[in-house]
Image (cartoon, rainbow, N blue to C red):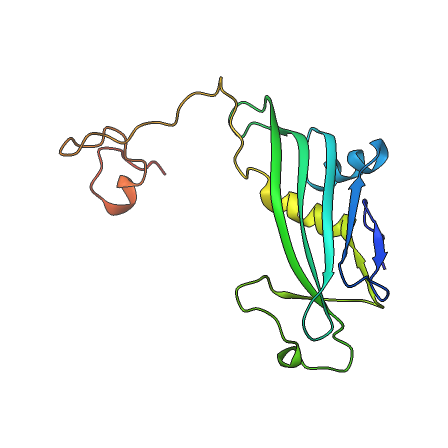
Length: 175
């Protein structure tokens, strides 16, 4: 079993009725490991705050928020692109051992049911997974040139790289 770069395991078997709030923050080594995992130039800050409450049918509802300061690589210029990332997190955990997922009672409008392993939840890995989903998939530097504009409607395209394949272009294929 691989240990995640940022692991904060919390036992939920003795969760108080009113729930519990937990704040976590990645240290420098954990941030560096997560930066490598998510192909970031830097992860200067990464923290999350969660509230864990008992839910219906032996479930645990986790609600929280994460905040991070990331530096990604521009997809055009490869320049550093710093960004502040914030995200809300909602998850429902249930002990899946010996029960069918259909037996777990949850609100259909909430998140998917995640497995509760040995009565524990890894809040660090939960936060890391949500960070990866929140990152901009195509970060662009403010200095990056704008993408080429489409030709105005009614005007022919001036460049047609695949016209040769259709047989309708001026380009000639060379052997």
